Image (cartoon, rainbow, N blue to C red; front, side, top):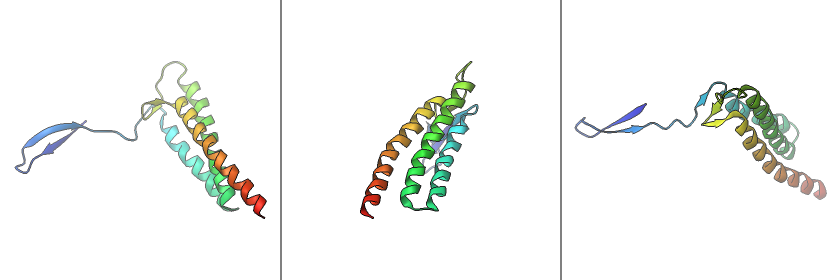
Length: 118
């Protein structure tokens, strides 16, 4: 798909390839939906306090990563069909789990610091 650019006289100037920021093949949309799982974990933790919400947000990312990895390995066993933004679904599993572990470090630090202050 190309985007046509026109100059002020209405003449076509040049064509620019469109960039697809969110795209998937097969069941790759699962990686996009998994983001909302992490947000749902955070919303559940918000009922308690901010520190619990942060920790559950991190846990939600790890859970999303595990789900993407398991489903991606199963569905892409024969051919790499299921992709989100050009990466295989199981690759998103590693990315999401990495995000979760990174966030978990800071969430845990916040929990322990606030616990020692009380």
